[in-house]
Image (cartoon, rainbow, N blue to C red):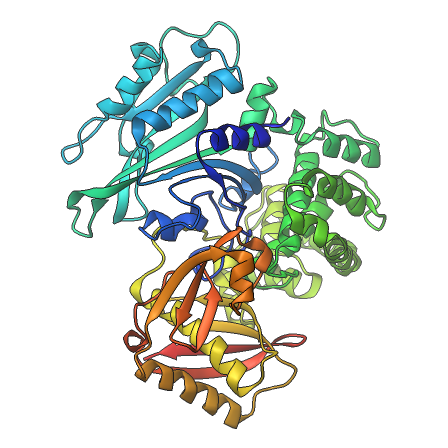
Length: 582
């Protein structure tokens, strides 16, 4: 039994309900391209909404984090990873949380007590030192010398400048023999394996701190890291999670792992992430914007490193590796099994598209290097490599770094912006997230998407279904199934109907029920498989009924005036509306 199964079985035995992993691509969260942590899909419930599964939850969550993309290739970094988590939403708190963590580590995973150490929050002028956590650890046998008290940088969590916050306690494991008597957090032989965050305060915009009436626990433990620890390897890619994939790459390249680690790790990591993004219900395809840009970049970077290993990139090398990854995860995530052919098609098409330009591009790059005489590669050339040969700027930078040459990245970005409408977020790699989203205006837009969906069914036809949405504080974007461009009359009728419902002041209510009952009641749902067996159904008067995680306004009068700014094609059979609330 692997660590995921052990974790879920343990916490279910302690009264927790297992919730399904949310999709990698989050709904209605403009602050991130992907779910980056186990807590992210639970934001509304951490903010106070009741969860349909109750107050004790556990799961393993698919995550994609790109802030460390350039670090992939070392022993520990990954773009896709799985996060184990357990939550208390106003139920148990510090003492019980720590006892559960300790029992799971020492009794289920059989980690020796002497190999564990912890950090706790040392406090400041507003929040006292966390003696409750420290005493809980001591009562379990953790010696004073194995407890380190650290400040806000290390042991405090807050989403941005304000919001629910609190100290955390981090659990460390000692890699190696001869465990020191005293825990030194700076000694890198101590590896953090679990983090328990205690949300017990609220900090406002002025820095004032008050105690929360309902306190939450949010924990996170990385599957890749804990597996490597349990198996006694210092290289994550030598653990059982990766061994069959690495073995396959060795066989395809006819080269040993030793001496070729970086390229093999990048191929393994990037193809695994590409498999999960391509399988997501959001239907992401390689493109030059947003999640599609990342998918394209990962596949192309894997191809380039395959070429460095002298793999015949026109062969089925990527399919062979992808099939191993699919087999490994399809029993845990049904979308991997359901979308197997989609995954393989995405890889094949992008490989074919990139391969025929890669050779020409690399030859052109060699000419550029020869001409530059160790000077900076100018923006014009970097953009030509992108525009003509399909080189993402990151690939040009990576290639240039191998020759100790700089690239005018700022100039490239300016040209990038001038020539095409592309996602600056994806290009600049700004990935943030957490509880800082869900502002008042975003909540209004979220409710407005439900009204728009209902109005399109009335005006265009019952066969209209939501295919996706994206919300920012400035606007809403709504994708829907439709086989034609909306006429001016259809757009105006849709807009008028939404505004009519807003003016009627319809109440927004929600109730919990089984998924089957929700569907039987006529509730609309996008990506039905991502929802748990018990769901929340939001109703807006008698005009809209949808499965949804919230948040929403209480009454439609709060929305203001709805205006459609643009209606356009999104993809085959899918149209897109951009609209604002004024």
